[in-house]
Length: 296
Image (cartoon, rainbow, N blue to C red; front, side, top):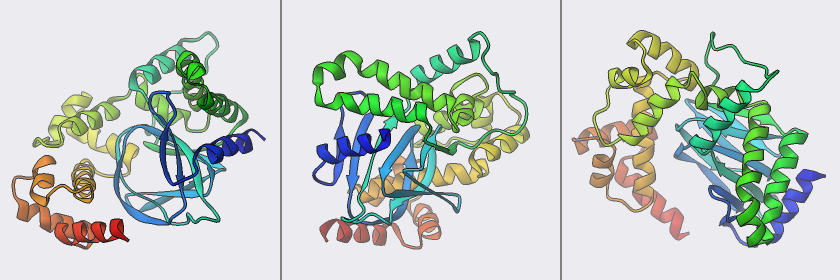
């Protein structure tokens, strides 16, 4: 019943395709009725909950399809291919996306793990993946419903929004994706810190040794733990982050040269070679194809 109420609120509010701000920082509602093929993207730390239709995110060749039965939590910046290949007017994609605020999430993780009687997850062993799917449970559904019920009242949103968002964060931490989020935002978040460092310095020649230093690990240990969390080697990850970010910039109208320089390439020809190897098109062909899609 709760999820149906969430869907009704979003359906009533969004009469056209697009993203709508809710008034609560980092929380947006969306509607999509046109199929969109998966394309390079960079997921920042985000929660995406769908109440109608389905989305797809491909990470290192592995497809993650999520719908009204499972929500997605991306607990650290990740290079993916994302799209809505099944959206249609008869089966619209409806849902909400919530940016995960590092400060609030970290505070909650520390409070949760410090609480009397809290179940503490062991820090040893393989790292959980940076992208996780979790089934809607009652606590999560109730928290999301209480959040979206604010959208009709700017006063309620202003007064209660941060508290309701905190409830959603807490439900996330207690749910099926909680392990991934706790390891990204709590003690032991070395890999997430290294990825954040890379994201903040994409235009600079960041090396694997630089990232290992940020994580406080030897190169060998960093390589092993990084692959556990992201499924990719650090070198693959850095290249994917740079190429995906550039692809998004080019699709947004930036010139190929600017996009290449903006993600740390000093040679446009090298950038073009690696771009074509990754996406099967040259950057210019990619740009032309995106413009044709936008004009259709």
